[in-house]
Amino acid sequence: MPESDPARTWFKCTDAERAAFEAGIKLGALYHQFVGAAVNAASVDSLEEAMAASLRTQPFVEGAQVRLDRKSLRQGPRPYDESSLTGEMMDVSVQVRYGESAVVGRLRYVPELGYPLMSLEAV
Amino acid sequence: MPESDPARTWFKCTDAERAAFEAGIKLGALYHQFVGAAVNAASVDSLEEAMAASLRTQPFVEGAQVRLDRKSLRQGPRPYDESSLTGEMMDVSVQVRYGESAVVGRLRYVPELGYPLMSLEAV
Amino acid sequence: MPESDPARTWFKCTDAERAAFEAGIKLGALYHQFVGAAVNAASVDSLEEAMAASLRTQPFVEGAQVRLDRKSLRQGPRPYDESSLTGEMMDVSVQVRYGESAVVGRLRYVPELGYPLMSLEAV
Amino acid sequence: MPESDPARTWFKCTDAERAAFEAGIKLGALYHQFVGAAVNAASVDSLEEAMAASLRTQPFVEGAQVRLDRKSLRQGPRPYDESSLTGEMMDVSVQVRYGESAVVGRLRYVPELGYPLMSLEAV
Image (cartoon, rainbow over all chains, first blue to last red; front, top):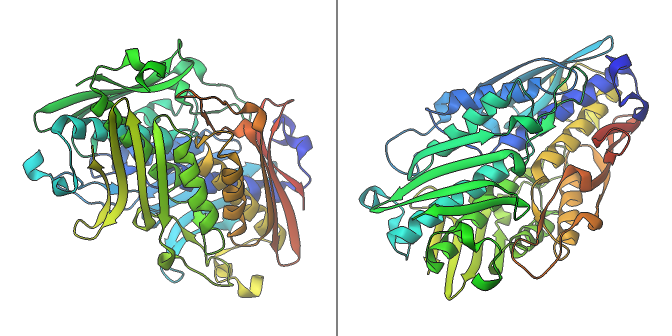
């Protein structure tokens, strides 16, 4: 990858630091792109797929999985029975490789912390 | 719809004005929710479907169609060959009904104006 | 305004419906543009001002007020003590005029409904 | 910082990799939070300040500077004379520290590449 990376001369870091940086970009971008989107039981599958596909288009991503929590979705026949996507509903994993370095970034709600955490599960 | 609308007492307007207001909300929301999303030839179908499904979950929407322009998509095997979704790439139609009033909202690039326009095509 | 509106030929509606549509666009856009933004006690003033200024740049807006609820903000010296902007924290009013028609759009949390409502308070 | 970081047990990486990851999150989030926002000459100062303030609220950020390019702004007295914020208009620098490791993340348009690049300028 580094040899095919047109941007490599703009970086001053190791391959592992670059992979970690790229994983952070992907998770920060995904959260802020999609949080607040209207979603209900009929649309959650397509939103999940679009989020994963969006991750997979990005530089140095080798794989991505997105799970949205269905239990939080409002459902019903009346107006305003739809929900907005929140960070608490997201469970995202993204595999990023740069050169010899592969990392796994994760975004998920951590009950002990009380908020959605973006973390590096493996470098 | 009005009789099943839990929010109707908060409005002071005709059904046609309400339908127009709701159409505006849907288009303004869609644009600002999804603009900037990473997209390429492999992910454009799922993004299009998620956008249309997101519209269809919302109050008073009877139908929605989303077309994203494939010609503007960058493609290729190198990092950074993905694109970001712009307003110029979107062609969106949303049908909204409130009581006896039905409207069609549209978002699309208008060459004569030089920008993406949100308009009411029929009331 | 109608005579200076370069887009008027794309609309089929009354001035009041147009004003209602434009108010909907502004509120839908504002919500989805800014929801999820990182905010704390030190940054809330600037976010509030930026949101109001963003509304005031838009077509047919005569005035806009934004109040963000400070009580919901996390505060503290530890990492992750910041909050994300939610719809529940927003109280927004926007005055829109098109021709002879003036409307007031509002976005605020309505306890009786249990969610942030976008409404037309006056036409 | 590591000793005051409530999330540190969820990470498996060096301090430098963590700092790089956090810098990536901040830049990815900023871009996707604010891209597409309505902006003109009257509102650009407040948007710039809100973006910088939003960065400074976030974990492990020691400083942040945001410059938005005024030359790209549409100006004028007619409706639709406002612009939308694009990545090409942003020049952002964010200083992140985790433990002994400090990094500088940067987001700016790079003419040689033809797109806005997020990079690590120093680790």
